[in-house]
Image (cartoon, rainbow over all chains, first blue to last red):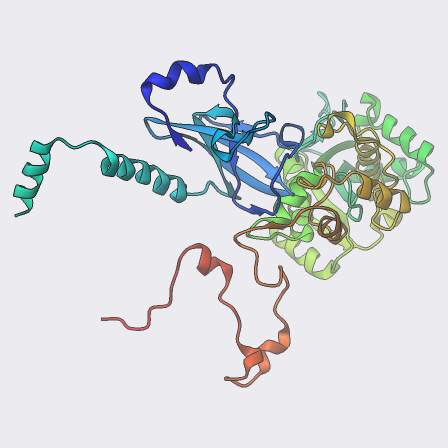
Length: 142
Length: 302
């Protein structure tokens, strides 16, 4: 998940259509391609919930938009060869929401909220701070 | 009746129409229930129910309703065709409930695991209830069973005190109304299974799956070649069957669920209750319910 600045938005449009990202409530011991569109057919249930099965188990999913200012990307190493690790290129597919699945019932997206909180914290830590603000901050603490 | 074999059917009743001019409330009716497709690892479990006026039972015998296992496939199809006829529906009505393989998997694998017997029982009482609610004056109920007949009978008697209940093994060979019910279970079940249209695998799955029974070599070979490493089998298969679980273990990647118990979903042994306290074997893990709900033991209360 990456935070994209406003100015990049135009360039990001060129990446193509949004992809649908699923967060499953189980650990699948596999990294690589999977035939998701062939086997995984969620049925909408109301405005935000959907239902599906995986390995025979009932899943209930909730659509979660990413926090404000955040954009998601699925990254894959590009086929172009790179001269050095620094020049390595990636193919990226954007997403702005993901479906958070729970087994039998909707799951509480605790991990996503924690990730969103980190984005805020990270922004606060790395933002430029004007000297006056710094001074004011120190005075407030004293 | 039109069957929709292309869709993975969810459980839902399909029934014969009640006819105008027949007073269903004034006559005493008998009702039979039978199932088809309990054992196979593929396809739905179908429950059939048939009802006729008690006085019309000899007519069923004359039509040829008897033990469905001794009836040929052609004869069964002919009887099923006759049951679609309005003339027949004047004295013989029916209703079916389809429990899809997907539904069976979901229920049996859910956190609150439900057994196939529990699903079957619910399907049976659902059918009896539906017929009663349509205003048919049912006074006798006959059910075929594979489980403990006495327990089953007692539970039905409690739910339907207005009916005389008979639960018996091989009831379809003893009572023509149960034989009729077995036709409405078996013929649609065979049809649904034979003509299954897969929505998965983009047409790469074939239909040479044999009888669907786990011991059938053709079924075994189909299961092996149809297994996707990530998703396992299409929704046509019952994931809760040990055949499927074993196949996934051998041919698909491992999947760990948060509510998996250590060492898999095995049940604790009866003997565990009979060890002395302090005996290592007697210690049992906390049930997954407590872990899931983040419930902890409180040692001190103030």
